[in-house]
Image 1 (cartoon, helix red, strand yellow):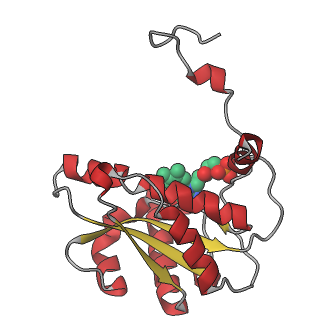
Image 2: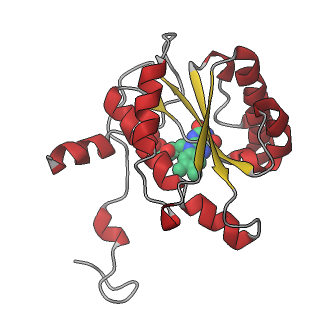
Image 3: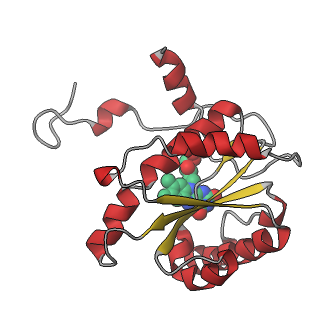
Length: 191
Ligand SMILES: Cc1cc2nc3c(=O)[nH]c(=O)nc-3n(C[C@H](O)[C@H](O)[C@H](O)COP(=O)(O)O)c2cc1C
């Protein structure tokens, strides 16, 4: 395996919020989600569950909730008002609540699902699909439950809109790595 290709994949993985009006086949989605499930999890418990949503009504309702949450968080100028009804696929990333419902359980669960989410983003990008991770759902989870028929023991962690990107995206912008590494003690420069 060529690390340069892996680095290139990671450096060009972007938040894509606009998509072409072209379908994404089931087989393609399954391939992306198979890659997601290769992720590590605590005790290899694999708590991730995915709901693939194509139904325009459901996507539209989720979009309304997303926008309402955006307005609460950022005011009327919420930056990411999107047309979720028209996004080809929404992947709802859920988790079986296997670690208990206290704060410790919730963070253990999240820690065991987000590696799979990152795999999902990278695998989708490798195929040429665009994605954007959204995580603001907790506050409205009660409304998502009947919409997605979630059982009691399953929670929503994220929703990832997915489709063929509207345009070519360049490299992502990240701070130089040396600035976030310390040598031996926090704050001692790496080089
Ligand atoms: C935890 C998390 C939550 C995010 N939530 C949103 C979101 O609600 N809406 C959105 O448009 N992008 C969301 N993003 C995408 C980030 O805004 C995006 O990755 C970041 O601005 C860097 O852009 P880039 O990935 O294109 O380089 C989220 C990313 C993460 C990791």
